[in-house]
Amino acid sequence: MSIPIPAIGAPAAIPSIQSPASPKSAGGFQSVLADAVARVEQFQQNSAGNIDKFLSGESEEVHKVALATQQAEIAFDLFLQVRNKVISAYQEVMRMQM
Image (cartoon, one colour):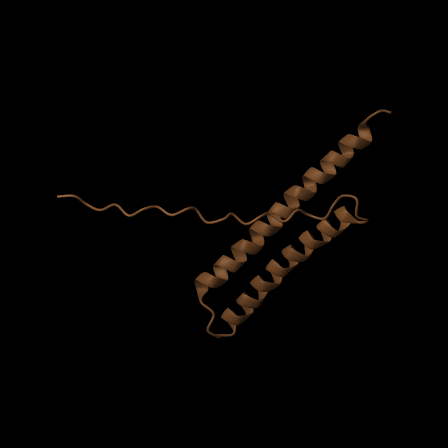
C-alpha cells in the first residue's frame, strides 16, 4: 500500500522591504520621529474610542477594548524606551572630547 505524497510548490515571493527615507533628505530624522509620535497617538485615540463605545453600551466587546488598551500601552512603552536610548546616545556624543 503506497500513500501518495503531494508535491511541494515553490515558495511564494517575499515582498521587498521599503527602505526608510534616505538620510540625505532634509528633516529625515524629524519626519521619522513625527511619524512615530503620530502612530503612538493613533493607538491612544483608538483605545480611548473603544473604551468610550464600551462604556456607552454600544456593541463593543470587552476583549477588543482590552486588546486596544494593551496595544496602546505597549506602543507608548516602546516609544518611551526608544526616546530614552536616543537621549542617552545624544548625551554620550556630547560628552566626547574633540
